[in-house]
Length: 141
Image (cartoon, rainbow, N blue to C red; front, side, top):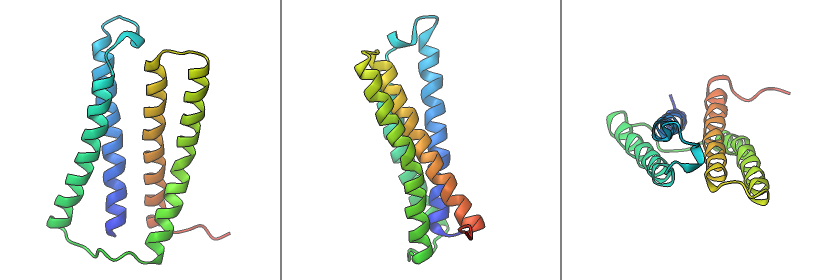
C-alpha cells in the first residue's frame, strides 16, 4: 500500500472518530436541554485539534514502523489533486449553508456545527475518493 493511501486511511478514520467523539460529548452534555444551550466550543476545538495531532502522530509512527518511499509519482499527485477537489464540494456547501444560517440569524451553535460537519464530510469524501482511486484506478471514459 502506497504511503499516500495509508495517509488517506488515517485521515478517514481520524475524521470519523473525532466527529463521533464530538457528538457523544455534546449530546451527553445536553441532558434534555436544547442543543443550542450546550457548551460546545471547547469540545469542538479540542476534537479538531486532537484530530490533527492524532493524524500527524499516527503518520509519524507508521512511517517509523513501516517505512515506505517518500517519493510521489505522477499517479500520486493526480490522485491527491482529484481527491482534494472532490472533497472541496462539501466546503462550498458548508460555507453557503453557514452564510444562509447567519443571514437568518440562527444560533451560533448550529452555524458552527454545520461548518464542522461539512469539514468532516469533506475529509471523508476526499479520503474515500483517494482510496477508491488507489484501489481501482481512474475510470476510463
